[in-house]
Length: 102
Image (cartoon, rainbow, N blue to C red):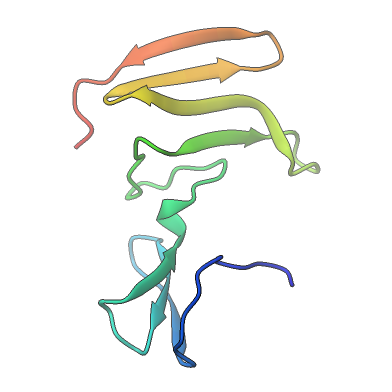
């Protein structure tokens, strides 16, 4: 097994669709209303232009170009509308106040 959504479904028919927003969505039963999993819910090291950064998500850098494990830089929310960034190698923190997330 290379990848799993961690989502159980009784359906045998699913569809994977890459939308113009660059969101990769796994849909159930050929219905646009039943989303099993979508890439925008699980950001890794890159935030795409149309992708929202939600309060329960983290962006974590890669260790290096050839090592794709978690790197030293992290962007995340601590409280609503407050974005933090952390450089783990030097143990410093910067706090950014976001006026609007729209």
